[in-house]
Amino acid sequence: MSDRKTANMILSRTRRNQIYLPYLRKKKYFDAIRKGDADRITALSQENYEYPTALFNRCTSYSEAMNKMYYEAVCAASEMCLVAIEAGLLDMVAYDIRDEFISEFDHASALPDLYDLVHGMAYNYAVKMKYVLKEKKKSPRLARMVSYIEDHLHEKIELADIAEYVNVSRTYASAIFRNELGITISEFILRERMLEAQRLLRETDMTVAAIADSLAFCSQSYFTKNFTETQGMTPVEYRKSFL
Image 1 (cartoon, rainbow, N blue to C red):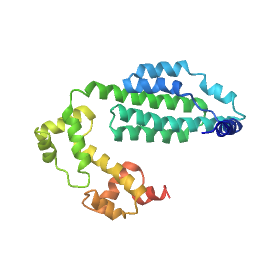
Image 2 (cartoon, one colour):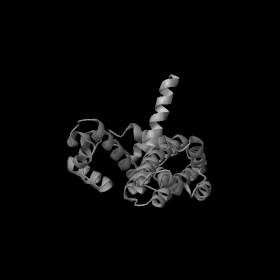
Image 3 (cartoon, rainbow, N blue to C red):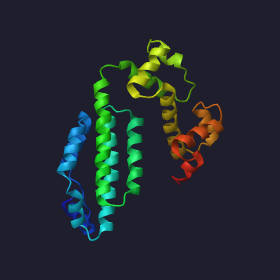
């Protein structure tokens, strides 16, 4: 990029009064998440407690400060989500945390609320990573079972097949999931299929019936029932929200 283009870009950002949180400041949070250090997140929250006030002082109105803080919060949600996934957190868990907190951002009415939510999100990721790191070396079978499920989402998945794949009994396979993830294998399979259903609804023009069949649901109505219960809206409503 030429010096002139760089200067113009900087000038444009200055005119918009856009505020970007420095990467080195964010990196402290990313490192704490990777290490599963929830206490460090708490410390960072206390160290930077004046940030909402500093942000407000750089804006012309409270509304402008809220918009900028919201923008930073959503960016942080995406960044922390990817950091956690790369560090070993199951993608479905990371995405659930991200989406849950972005939804909470929408209801925040004050700068301190958004600030606390961002740190609550970072703390949540760190707690989950602490557990992942603690269990990571103890359960190679879990990783293999998860891989098997993800590879067979579009087929009928039987507990016996999963257990055979990792050479354990069905009872032991179930125990691994419950002890390490806190959910049953059936719940995990459903959540993975719901994530894939969301992707198909967003990115393809497949009918709801075709998606249900593709993901091995016994009927469209059963698929719709599960989707509505887990997502809070029907598949059709979900698709319309992205149009």
